Length: 150
Ligand code: HEC
Image (tube, rainbow, N blue to C red; front, top):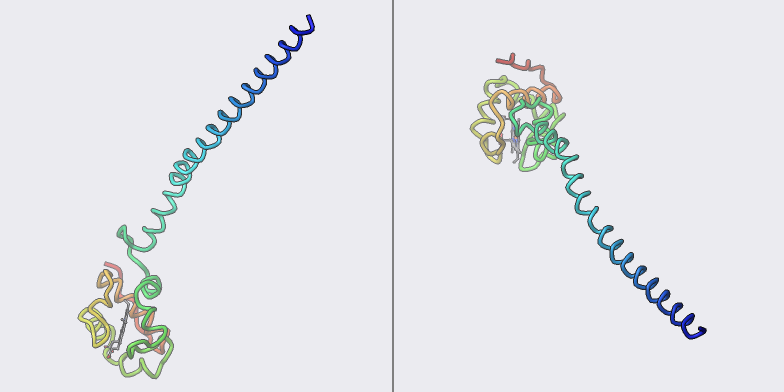
């Protein structure tokens, strides 16, 4: 009778250990699965934001404002005066250039001028370039008018 009780305990112990091992293996497997699902869910959730950012940058065709294009494509040279670029807000550097008017300035940017590559190396449209020029000029002592939207 006593031997059977001990055997019963041993069976119980083995059964309990087996259950714990199975539970741990299952928990481990379950804990790794949600990570994959979460990554997918997160990328789905942030996708609209990523697309919105691209749209804001103008890659999806929305026309950028003068300031937006300036910040995206002109600031690198014109904030610092790199490569001899007239600096933003340096009225003295801009005064002689402003005499050409918007048309002349736009021509310089479209065709490029010395260290400035054609279209300043950007994919901007003429209208966007014109707005960026107006933005820059008017921060630098000019009083150019933004051309009316077509
Ligand atoms: C790689 C540097 C660089 C970038 C980027 C750049 N510029 Fe320039 N920009 C210059 C330099 C250098 C000059 C002076 C050229 C000269 O007169 O020798 C200049 C001159 C100008 C002028 C005066 C042109 C004239 O006829 O006097 C305008 C207007 C201008 N840039 C607008 C822009 C706009 C708008 C952007 C952005 C879309 C831009 N630039 C981006 C380097 C740059």
